[in-house]
Image 1 (cartoon, helix red, strand yellow):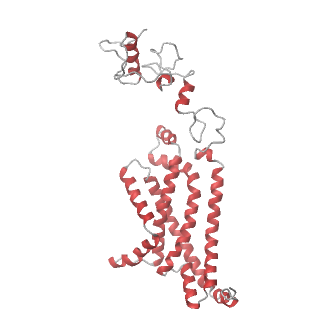
Image 2: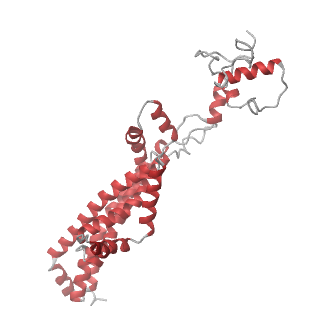
Image 3: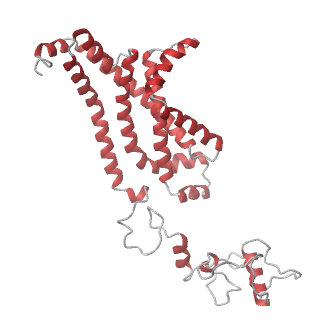
Amino acid sequence: MTEIFAPYKWEALFARWPDILAAFGMTAAISALALVIALVLGFVFGVFAVSRFRILRALTRVYVETVQNIPLLLQVFVLYAVFPLIGLTIASFWIGVIAIGAYHGGYMSEVVRSGIGSVHRGQFEAAKSQGFSPVQTMTLIILPQAMRIILPPLAVQAANLVKNTSVLALIAGGELMYFANSFAGDTSYYGPAYVAAAVLYFAICFPLSRGAVYLEHRMGAHRHVATGDATEELAADAVEVTPGTHDITGHAAAQAMAAGVTTMVEGTSTLVPPVADKGRYLTYAELYGIDAPAWPDRRTVAPRTPRNRRGIARVRGAIGRTGGRRKGKGRRGGRK
């Protein structure tokens, strides 16, 4: 064991410190450029994945499934050995940048897609109601909120990206793993060579891994704002709420509003208090079916009494189907 890490072997390794620094710089440069490509592809295809255009969603699935189900080493070999056969020769440095960037771009696009999906749909509807374009909605409203979810896994992907630069040793990429293999093969000093490479990889990846943990805890402290995980804050709430907020929605909203907030008088924009005559004014409880199994419509089987006919005409008029006019008469039905 002591012979593997003999002092003279370490001396031989440290004597080549310029080569070690060059290999370390090559790894850092490939990682930085590949990370830029991966981030660009990740955000572009992550947004495409939630697009309303089917062609963009299909293009995203093809890209993601391709890069995730083909080994990175095989993708590198395609660029290194196959492309020259068709007259396209790429330097090892740029092969690493392109292959690793495209490979991790597929994983980052899934992270971005999940982050966008975590934002409540009401944010999209609110932006649309305020006149924001789809691009403005995504860049100004959705993505800033989704970043709380996206950042921690992106940091993890960045660390994995740095480690995956080691596959370039098989095509003489000039990075840390290539230097370690070359030095060990020339001198048979395998112990110092691989330990030094491991320490240098650790020096790059450990801060990224700890940064991911920090971001996860940092964003988790405000998860009820962005992610909808507000279990602790909402434990005492007895009504249904939108996940991540204290906005009352659904049937809880209908029940709350049925206590005194009513819909508009048919044909006007004036709010009126609820009254006992349900044929004249509609409460939210009635509108959402809280206190009735279903609204009568053309398919409803019910006794055709004069009062029922007047009520049906008013319902249809309120929801804009028939204008609220009774058949054969020129005025709105019902009592005055």
